[in-house]
Length: 143
Picture (cartoon, rainbow, N blue to C red):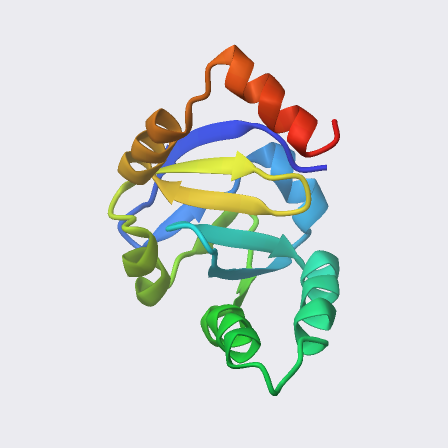
């Protein structure tokens, strides 16, 4: 289970350090892709295979399904995590997420989200719920 939030930065070679708590679940290879939000997702290989299986079952006659599959498949990159726990963030993906230097890495159960610090702060502030809204949301999702 991938949980927690970590702040970090990319180095001069555009590498990020994968938090040690996440490395055991990722192993040495993972998939990096665009997310639906303006961030990136790091998937363990086994989770990516399950995700790909679901995407491949979308109806190919549906233009929205094709667009969704393209969004994830076209941006996906297989990455290796080096012995120091670093992985390279390709330019196209950094640009998509607005990552220039500072970033926030967030565990999201079966995947990891990588946000620019600015985008994370903006998103976090906009998404804050008061306790009554949070309780209502939990009830709506059957918690």
